[in-house]
Length: 332
Image 1 (cartoon, rainbow, N blue to C red):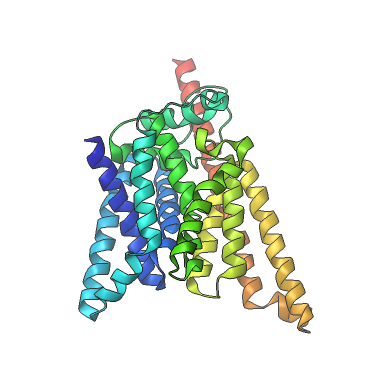
Image 2: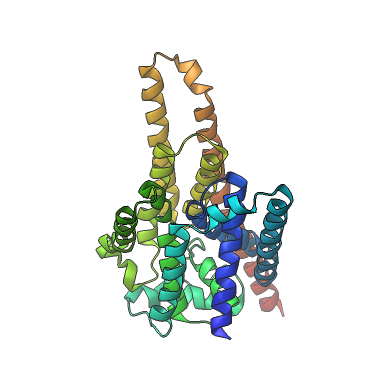
C-alpha cells in the first residue's frame, strides 16, 4: 500500500509539472518545483478554510484532470511528440531516479535533531492527526505552515505518518529547486553528470542547517534565495518568469517569519538592480517607476503582504474562536 502511495504521489507531481511544461513551453525540469509549490499553496488555501482532507482529494483529482487535458489537447493539435520531448529529459530522468532512491533511503529513517522534538516534527505529526493548521499543543510557537503542510500532503497520499516521509518531502522539495540547472547542460553528457553531482552536493554545503539530516526549513530559505535570484537574473522576460516569481515569493513568505524579511530584502535588491540598469541607459525616474519591471515588483510586494496577512488573520480568527469556546466551557 505504501509503495502504491509513493507511485501515486509521483504521478501527481509529474502531472502538474507536465501541465506547466505545456502551458509555458518549457522542459519539465523547470516546472517540477512549480508543481510542488502549487500543491503546497493549494493545500494552504484549503487549510485556512479548515478543509485539508478535502484539499488532498481535490488536488489529487485535479492533477489527473490536468494531465488528461494536456495529453488530449496535444493529441488534438498533433503536438504530442513535442510534449514528449519536454517531458522525457535528462532533468526528469534524474528526478525520477532520485525520487525512488530517496524512498529507499528514508523509508525507516527517524529524526534525531533537537528542534524536531520541540516543534518541527511534532507540528507535522499534529497536523497529520488533527487535520488542522495550528498546532494543538498549548504554549508553542505557531510558525507558518510550510513545509509541514506539504509533508502532510505527502503522508496522506502515501497513507501513513512517518518521520522518514518528513525527510523525504524536505529532500525532494529542496532538490526540485536545482533542477532548472539542467538547461545549462545543452545535452552534453559530461555537463549533465557534473550538474547531477552539484545538485546532490549543494544542499550539503548548508552544514549548520543539516539539510540531509533533518526536516528543518532553514536550508530551504537559502535554496529559494538562490532560485529566485537565478530566475530573475537569468530567465528571459516571459509569463513563466512572472508566474514563477509570484508563487515562489508567496511560498517563501509562508516558511518562517524570517521568510517575509528575506522576501522583502530580495525584492529591494531586484528593484535596485532595475533602477541602476535603467538609469545607466539614461531613463528618467518616472519612466523607471512606471516600467513593466517596476509594476511586476510592486505586484510581487502585494503578493508577499497579502500572503503573510492571510496567515496572521487566520491565526487571529482561530485564537478568537478558541477563546470563545473556552469562555463557553467556563460558563457551563
